Length: 191
Image (cartoon, rainbow, N blue to C red; front, side):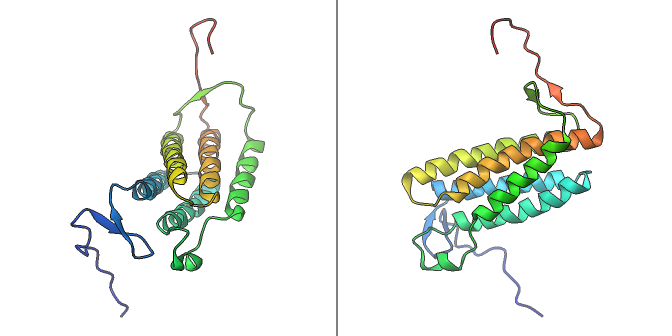
């Protein structure tokens, strides 16, 4: 039988947590807040996957969920760490895959001519929620990158991922027979 990983370690009882390089930092640090938000994003994608997701989107969301785990460990390992060479990092390959996936969905969708509101199907609403969490994670990565070198791919990955989640929410509605909910601007002379 394999070694069991203990869930509680008591090492965080003082308000600190360990990065992958062994350094202890405050649980309120920007780095921890950033990878914690990526974890939150992954969790809401898990909630979306627990519902009836069209198969094509389900397969892609499962891959994204795994990539978000990679991103979390990437963010939990400062670039200047000796261990950083052994940690899988987000690369241009993952970014290109997201772009191709967005293009694949977009080719099947009617053109977008209006702003749309979140909703339609339940899965679309969850994907819109995931998109907003992704945008928050993106803002945190920008703030983190202003304080320390984290590389460029994490920010680009989350920027593309939020675009993917927007497109996937529309595609889910399309596949499930729901219309996009169009924003109705009642005020003349404004957007």
